[in-house]
Image (tube, rainbow, N blue to C red; front, side, top):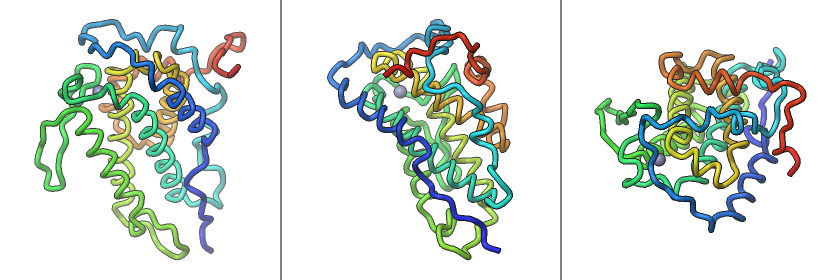
Amino acid sequence: MHSQKTPRNGLSCKMVLQAVGKVLRKSKTKPNGKKAPAEEKKHYLEPEYTKVRLMDFGLKDLVSLPSKEIDLNEWLASNTTTFFNLINLQYSTISEFCTGETCQAMTACNTIYYWYDERGKKTKCTAPQYVDFVMSFVQKVVTDDKIFPTKYGREFPNSFEILIKKICRYLFHVLAHIYWAHFKESVALDLQGHLNTLYAHFIVFIREFNLVDSKETCIMDDLSEVLCTPLPPHTHNHVTER
Ligand SMILES: [Zn+2]
């Protein structure tokens, strides 16, 4: 029996539209783009920000394989493609503040990420260059019908799991950089609710299928613990009022 083919978009259309609308409306308000020193307090951990989320229900239910009728690889491909689109969009909201001058290296919590090219050669690059490498790589993989097959009868390649893990690791680097270097700008654009929800959804997904090594994600464990814990029922979530 053929497995069900699931659509690879539309999981969070409302979220995307809200994010785009916000940026379009607020693109003229350029926040002060001074870079935060490494030892500065992590503003993204302050309760006034961590309680701001678009939704607060069982993310685990949202990411777990819905039924045995759906092929696991299809589910991973569908979700990974959606996260790629959403993280790309979230980065685009602050990309004008992420330049070769403001972000001379791809940093997150005192970690510097280096890009390794196809031959495994380590390359030092700025954050925008790194993100560009990531997005180009992921775009190429998710649109390659030999790796992410969309036609019935096509099998996923043996390298599929390795590639999914690689993509998720790269996307994690982008999210970590947004928090570390551009959280203030995300707040100025009033997009911290989108960022927090996207981050929590992504972390619960990669944990569910063990897609990124904890040695990679541990630098953000403090935030992951706060955001992946449901809010107490009485907490007022003002973002949903929009
Ligand atoms: Zn940056």
